[in-house]
Length: 331
Image (tube, rainbow, N blue to C red; front, side):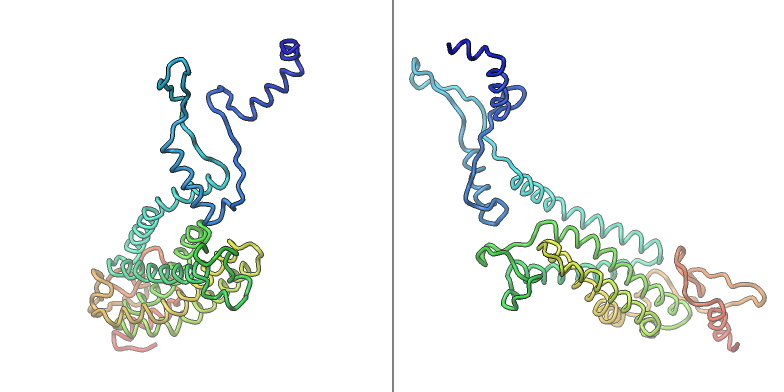
């Protein structure tokens, strides 16, 4: 009877279905489903996953033959997998590669700015300001969402997980996403300012006067752009998804720091602390300004002009005026 049941096509079909549900196609592995009372995505759940994997790595699946006591055969290894485990592995791989990504990004930033401004100091200062802004932004994000410093306010976008304080954590993709966006925005505002500073410096002003004049001209534009981006990113704080709250918070903090601290305080202070000739090294100011009346001046590294590839917001009339001023004339 049992043999006839097993040979029944319908029974065989359902039998294969059950086997396929707990085995791979080659029948070389068996799947066992485990259900726990822990949230595998929480900090406690991740610790449990790590502990189980360590125990599995130290164990072997074996079978013994009763006819030969002590004789065992190793059948294979045990592995723990699932959606939470895959995300945990992805986070580990991402953070293992993150230092290399950050280093490569900053090197590319230095190469691009160095090529554009023909200076070795300008890209170094830009990377220093970017690094400072990113460290402060990530630090505030950890304080808010990992240590819960704003938990007592009861504001939903700043609330941490319901786990005990020792198990609060930030979503692993938050710093990765925020890093790329903040580097782009930080460079934009830095270039807006340094483009104008370079223009005034090459027109004959010293470094301090150039940055003050540039802040007077471009500071309002940079602030307005920063406020617009702050409002745009601030919309993420209205989301009911915690990861969007975290990303929005870090982007808002980074934009405000870069617009109102880095460009208004950090860069001017750094330029004031460095000798004027070293601010744009190895680029040098031209000692004389020559202008051929009747044709446009040749703007180059030793003239009034700009770094190649940058479009000046100042008019040609203003440039002619500066050149004639250096020749002792007015227009």
